[in-house]
Length: 139
Image 1 (cartoon, helix red, strand yellow):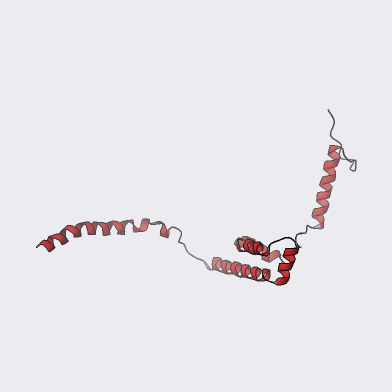
Image 2 (image 1 turned 30 degrees about the vertical axis):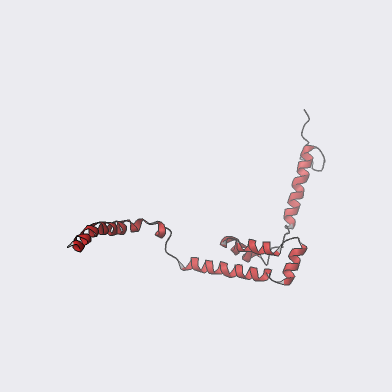
Protein backbone atom coordinates (compact mmCIF):
# COMPACT_ATOMS: atom_id res chain seq x y z
CA UNK A 1 0.00 0.00 0.00
CA UNK A 2 2.84 2.31 0.75
CA UNK A 3 4.45 1.73 -2.68
CA UNK A 4 1.17 2.48 -4.42
CA UNK A 5 0.84 5.88 -2.71
CA UNK A 6 4.48 6.69 -3.55
CA UNK A 7 3.72 6.15 -7.26
CA UNK A 8 0.64 8.27 -7.07
CA UNK A 9 2.51 11.11 -5.39
CA UNK A 10 5.27 11.13 -8.01
CA UNK A 11 3.19 10.46 -11.11
CA UNK A 12 1.36 13.80 -11.06
CA UNK A 13 4.51 16.02 -10.90
CA UNK A 14 6.29 13.79 -13.43
CA UNK A 15 3.40 14.06 -15.85
CA UNK A 16 3.38 17.83 -15.36
CA UNK A 17 7.15 18.06 -16.07
CA UNK A 18 6.84 15.94 -19.22
CA UNK A 19 3.96 18.07 -20.48
CA UNK A 20 5.92 21.24 -19.72
CA UNK A 21 9.01 19.98 -21.57
CA UNK A 22 6.94 18.99 -24.60
CA UNK A 23 5.27 22.40 -24.62
CA UNK A 24 8.55 24.34 -24.40
CA UNK A 25 10.49 22.17 -26.87
CA UNK A 26 9.54 24.20 -29.97
CA UNK A 27 10.74 27.38 -28.22
CA UNK A 28 14.33 26.14 -27.93
CA UNK A 29 16.85 28.17 -29.92
CA UNK A 30 18.55 25.06 -31.30
CA UNK A 31 16.32 25.11 -34.35
CA UNK A 32 16.37 28.87 -34.89
CA UNK A 33 19.10 28.88 -37.58
CA UNK A 34 17.92 25.85 -39.48
CA UNK A 35 16.63 26.56 -42.97
CA UNK A 36 16.35 25.05 -46.39
CA UNK A 37 19.60 24.42 -48.24
CA UNK A 38 19.50 25.02 -51.95
CA UNK A 39 21.81 23.41 -54.46
CA UNK A 40 23.38 26.71 -55.52
CA UNK A 41 24.61 27.58 -52.04
CA UNK A 42 26.01 24.09 -51.54
CA UNK A 43 27.87 24.27 -54.87
CA UNK A 44 29.19 27.73 -53.99
CA UNK A 45 30.41 26.50 -50.62
CA UNK A 46 32.10 23.46 -52.18
CA UNK A 47 33.72 25.68 -54.82
CA UNK A 48 35.01 28.04 -52.13
CA UNK A 49 36.48 25.14 -50.18
CA UNK A 50 38.16 23.82 -53.34
CA UNK A 51 39.60 27.25 -54.14
CA UNK A 52 40.86 27.67 -50.58
CA UNK A 53 42.51 24.24 -50.68
CA UNK A 54 44.09 25.05 -54.05
CA UNK A 55 45.50 28.36 -52.77
CA UNK A 56 46.87 26.71 -49.64
CA UNK A 57 48.48 24.03 -51.80
CA UNK A 58 50.13 26.73 -53.92
CA UNK A 59 51.41 28.43 -50.76
CA UNK A 60 53.04 25.15 -49.70
CA UNK A 61 55.28 25.24 -52.79
CA UNK A 62 58.93 25.94 -51.89
CA UNK A 63 59.36 28.48 -54.72
CA UNK A 64 56.27 30.42 -53.65
CA UNK A 65 57.45 30.42 -50.05
CA UNK A 66 60.87 31.68 -51.11
CA UNK A 67 59.24 34.53 -53.09
CA UNK A 68 57.04 35.41 -50.10
CA UNK A 69 60.07 35.56 -47.83
CA UNK A 70 61.90 37.74 -50.39
CA UNK A 71 58.95 40.15 -50.29
CA UNK A 72 58.95 40.17 -46.48
CA UNK A 73 55.81 38.07 -45.99
CA UNK A 74 55.72 35.24 -43.47
CA UNK A 75 54.41 32.11 -45.32
CA UNK A 76 52.52 30.90 -42.24
CA UNK A 77 50.81 34.27 -41.91
CA UNK A 78 49.85 34.15 -45.59
CA UNK A 79 48.28 30.71 -45.08
CA UNK A 80 46.33 32.00 -42.09
CA UNK A 81 45.01 34.92 -44.13
CA UNK A 82 43.96 32.65 -47.00
CA UNK A 83 42.16 30.41 -44.50
CA UNK A 84 40.20 33.44 -43.20
CA UNK A 85 39.04 34.72 -46.62
CA UNK A 86 35.29 34.85 -47.11
CA UNK A 87 33.61 32.97 -49.94
CA UNK A 88 33.08 36.20 -51.88
CA UNK A 89 36.73 37.19 -51.53
CA UNK A 90 37.81 33.75 -52.70
CA UNK A 91 35.52 33.93 -55.73
CA UNK A 92 36.92 37.36 -56.67
CA UNK A 93 40.48 36.17 -56.16
CA UNK A 94 39.90 33.08 -58.29
CA UNK A 95 38.29 35.10 -61.08
CA UNK A 96 41.05 37.73 -61.23
CA UNK A 97 44.15 35.76 -60.21
CA UNK A 98 45.36 35.05 -63.74
CA UNK A 99 44.60 38.49 -65.21
CA UNK A 100 45.46 41.02 -62.47
CA UNK A 101 49.11 41.90 -61.95
CA UNK A 102 50.30 41.19 -58.43
CA UNK A 103 50.61 44.41 -56.46
CA UNK A 104 50.68 46.64 -59.53
CA UNK A 105 48.37 49.46 -60.52
CA UNK A 106 47.19 49.99 -64.06
CA UNK A 107 48.93 52.59 -66.22
CA UNK A 108 45.75 54.67 -66.37
CA UNK A 109 45.57 54.69 -62.57
CA UNK A 110 49.15 55.91 -62.27
CA UNK A 111 48.54 58.69 -64.83
CA UNK A 112 45.39 59.78 -62.97
CA UNK A 113 47.24 59.93 -59.65
CA UNK A 114 50.07 61.99 -61.15
CA UNK A 115 47.54 64.36 -62.76
CA UNK A 116 45.71 64.89 -59.46
CA UNK A 117 49.00 65.56 -57.66
CA UNK A 118 50.00 68.19 -60.26
CA UNK A 119 46.58 69.86 -60.06
CA UNK A 120 46.88 70.07 -56.27
CA UNK A 121 50.42 71.48 -56.55
CA UNK A 122 49.15 74.07 -59.07
CA UNK A 123 46.26 75.03 -56.78
CA UNK A 124 48.63 75.50 -53.85
CA UNK A 125 51.00 77.57 -55.98
CA UNK A 126 54.03 75.29 -55.93
CA UNK A 127 53.99 74.70 -59.70
CA UNK A 128 52.49 76.42 -62.74
CA UNK A 129 51.84 73.58 -65.20
CA UNK A 130 48.15 73.93 -66.06
CA UNK A 131 46.73 77.28 -67.13
CA UNK A 132 43.19 76.37 -66.04
CA UNK A 133 44.28 75.96 -62.41
CA UNK A 134 45.11 79.17 -60.65
CA UNK A 135 47.00 79.35 -57.38
CA UNK A 136 45.10 79.98 -54.19
CA UNK A 137 45.05 83.69 -53.35
CA UNK A 138 47.08 84.82 -50.39
CA UNK A 139 45.10 86.83 -47.85
